[in-house]
Each structure stands twice: as C-alpha cells, then as structure tokens.
Amino acid sequence: MTSLIPGPAGRPDFRLDRPSALIAALPAMLGFIPEDSLVVVTLADGLIEAVLRRDLRDLDNPEHVAFEALAAVLGPGSADAVIAVVISPVLDELEAGDIIRRLAKHLEYHGVSLIAGHVVDRVGAHGWWRCYDGCGAGGPVDDPQCSPLTAAAVLAGRTVHRRREDLVALIAPTDTTRTAALAVSLRRPFQWPCDTAAADRRAVNRVMRTACRAAEFRPLSNREILAIARSLMALRVRDTLCALAVGALAADVERLWLALSRLLPPPWRAEALVLLGFSAYVRGDGPLAGVALDAALMAQADHRLGQLLMSALLSGMRPDEIGTLADTGYRIAHELGISLPPRQIRRAG
Image 1 (tube, rainbow, N blue to C red):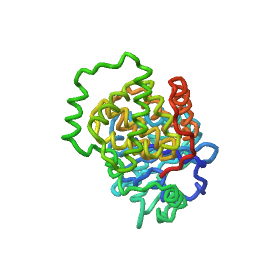
Image 2: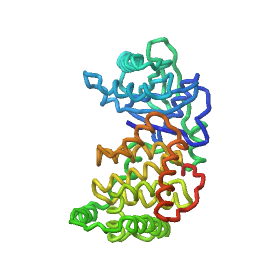
Image 3: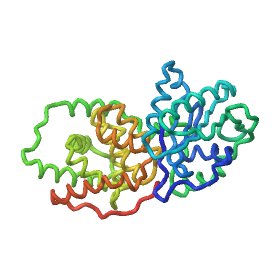
Image 4: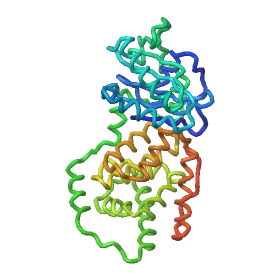
C-alpha cells in the first residue's frame, strides 16, 4: 500500500468534477505512475485528504481482506467520501466495476461514501477513462505533465518516477557484501557505557558531525556506521534525532538516513528507515515517507514508531501535525544538555 500526504502548504486545490484531470494528477500525488492498481482518493470537506493504492493482484483474496483493510484505514480518519480509480489495460468495465462495488460495500460499513468510480486503461498519453457502472461517460485522460499538481511537485523538488519500483530502488541495499560484514560486527556482544546520559550526548553529536561530513560527499566508514547503528537502538537517542528533521541540518541528516538505509542490515536498518520516513513526512514528501515506512515495517513489523507514523500517514495527518513529534526530541536534548540546530521551515525536495 502506498499513501500520500499533500505538502505543508495545504491540500491540493483543483476541480474534482473532471475525472480526466483527477486521473492525470495521480502520478504527482503518488510519486510514480500507477499501473494495475486500485487507487482511492479520500476527501474531507470536498478537498483531497490522502491517496491510497493497492496492487490489483492483492485484491484476489476471496475473503476480501484487502478491501476490509482499506476500509478499516479510512473509517477512523477525517475522510467523509472517496473516489476510486481502477487502472488496468486488461480488465473490462464489468470486472473493474466489481472491484469498485466491493470497495463501496466495505466503505459503507465504516461510514464512508463512495461518490465516484472510474476505470482507466493507463495514466498518460492515449489513456482513456470511463465510469465503472456503465453510465456511458468517458474520455481521454489529461496529460499528467500538464497537471497543476505535477507542476507543484516539480517546484517543490519532488520527482515523479516511472514506476513504484523506481521509488523503492532509492532505499534498496547497494552493497550486500558490506552489509553482511556490518551484520557480523553488529551481532557481536557490545558493552553499553555505564553513563548512558553521556553516551547519548556523544551519540547525538556524532550523528550531527557525520551528517555534515556526508554532505561534503565524504564516504562513511564502517566504524561510523557501526557506532550510529548501535546508538539508534537507544530510544532516547532516536527520539532526540527526530528533532533534526525540522532543524537547519535536516537535509544533511536525511541524506545520512538514506545512506544508512541502504547499508545497514535488519533490524538496525529499520531505525534508519523510520527516521528517513519521518524526515520525508515532515517536509511533505509522502511518497518517499510511505516507501521508507513500508520497508521499515518489513524489516521490523513491531516497530512502534514506524507503526505510529504509518498509521498517521494512511489517515491523512498533515506534515505540520506529525512534525510536533520533534518537540519531544528538543525536550530530551535540553534535558541532556545537547545544543540542536534551530528549527526551520522545510519543503519537499
């Protein structure tokens, strides 16, 4: 499942009564061009709140587990209506319509209304949409490159990828041999310092120094990686580091989390991915946040902060709202006597 939280400047504001425009905007909202997918656009007070996507192959379960999961996510949130889009070059109107009708049934149980459903063969040039219930409406899909949301994404520095796999590849392991060697070292017995407060201060300061060096394109040494990986397992350190996502070092620290996400083995990788996901979430890059948190929960399914962030992402919580988690980091830093970079306003990119 993939989700989008629109950027901190506010929800996308464009006409929802034109299916061709809505479908053309999906790549900008998801971060990639969806194929063979069910996409659900959630609305609150008539404005887009969030976007969720499922692979069509996930919907084949006779128990309708995927539909119930989607409806359960949408039910408790602020969404009061949804628009569903089935994207497939092979499904006919009857098959695609059946998918939307099953979704509508589960949504109704959770008090959410389906206000429109569309079927489209492709999102892009020569794509053609039609209504799901055989009403006869339909037409060409607008050019995604001309969508106002695509323009907004470009201005914010976000990339629209050709496939979801291209987005996932950003966080994929890059050096399996090195990762295996790091795993051996990390699994060896390690003596934690007796003075945990002093150790936590050193750990946070180490991350900030390493992020600055990484920003200068200096390669990370195994010693640096091991020290940071071990320290991320300390909740006080990790929670303090969340504050860096809203500070002046945010971009440099996010690059560090990305590098560690590619190099660390599980479960240490989960910590770097969660911090990467939080950083992307706070700056309004919902697609990267969703992919990072998906991977984090695959590496460690019971990761509590990862679960919290994913739940917030799927429910449509705004970046500025989830960003208040950084307040905890600043409070802990103050208690530990750590001087963190000042806050700054970030945009996706």
